[in-house]
Image (cartoon, rainbow, N blue to C red):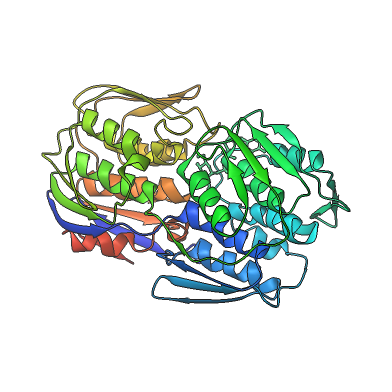
Amino acid sequence: MDFLKAISVRESSYLKGTIEIQGSKNTVLPIIAATVLTDGISVIHNCPDIKDVEVMCELLQCLNIKTCYKDHVLSIDTRKAQYAMLPYELTGKLRSSVLMLGAMLGRWGRAEIGMPGGCTIGTRPIDIHLEGFSRMNVDICMKDHLLCCDSFYLQGCDFHLRYPSVGATENLLLAACGAKGRTILRGAAKEPEIIELCNYLQSIGVLIDGIGSDVLVIKGTKYLCCADYINVYDRIVAGTYLLMAAAIPSELLLTGIDDIHYIKNILKVCAQLGLNVIRFDRCLHVWSNGIVAPGKFATGIYPEFPTDLMPVLISVLLRAGGDSQVTETVFENRFSVVDELKKLDGKLYVKGNTVFIEKTDQLCGHTVKATDLRQGAALIVAGLMAFGYTTITDTSYIDRGYEDIVGDLNRVGAEITYI
Ligand code: UD1
């Protein structure tokens, strides 16, 4: 990754124009992994042009799976797929590489992969994933820094997830597709990404009951077909621009929002902050005078406010006319935005798992450092609010999930550029 990349952004007094919301990163990555279960050519439409998709395709290529990406259409040809080990040099580049475990177990009954990477937002253990696999009759060990999973006879099971982990639910769903008999996942995650993955798995021939609930019943089969998939919009990217529009006087049209349900809670928080929203067709017309109402907020599992937008919400609350609080309940160490916002003269501090944001008269441009994907986006939003110019360094993290944040903001009138 080119960590030296940097972005310069100037205070913005008004944003106006249209932003097309890209396809979802967190939805498409598990679906790319799921294609490993199939034998043929799959086509994924509205696939975002982001670094994580590129790396996921490189992982497939290690398995002799051909991928072709053009104009947001990703074709995946699994007809000559061959089992192989996946090296840490690739798996360490993203969190979703862990999903190759479930997909490879589902197809070959075994997997050897390097440990997953991803944003440093906590310890991010995978114990629930592995507990579920071992209940499916998988032997697990570490060998030469590789996580080795092997099952002579992958067996469906009745497993209770002690926390509704998104990644563990996805991984166990993938393995269950190739397991003998029925798998019941209790306490499963209910995030939109899970619903989309279940719908895709159904389209390739897996029988799943309970989609959208916390009990999923999966009937495994070895005979899966290929299917095309039209990716949904990225609810976190949409949420980033919605929150930004609450903090900066603006009039924006966000397009490509096909299912408003996925962002209901984000819209509720934005309305609380003072953003006006009208929905028509697949668009949201949003506007504000940039006056932000203070409040107390908390992140949570879906349908609560998403943890991924917590750093952006914190930036926005620095504009509020009073003190605010944001409590993080999903990850234990996701507050790296706080120290960077202090460099912009933000008045805020962390106590326990809550960030206290005090009324800040004016943020002032400075040099700040992106340390993860969403924190980086939050710093850009803060830069739009800060007097003068703000430089954000190490912005390659942002490329992992935002297709063209600089272009999107330029097109609505922001002064923002790569330096
Ligand atoms: C996914 C999303 C991420 C989002 C998160 C929560 C992707 C690529 N990433 O991450 O953007 O913020 O869901 O919505 O889709 N946990 C354990 N043991 C496990 C697994 C998780 O203790 O085996 C804990 C984690 O440390 C964390 C919590 O569960 O505190 C949530 O993690 P999880 O839902 O698994 O998030 P990810 O799938 O990693």
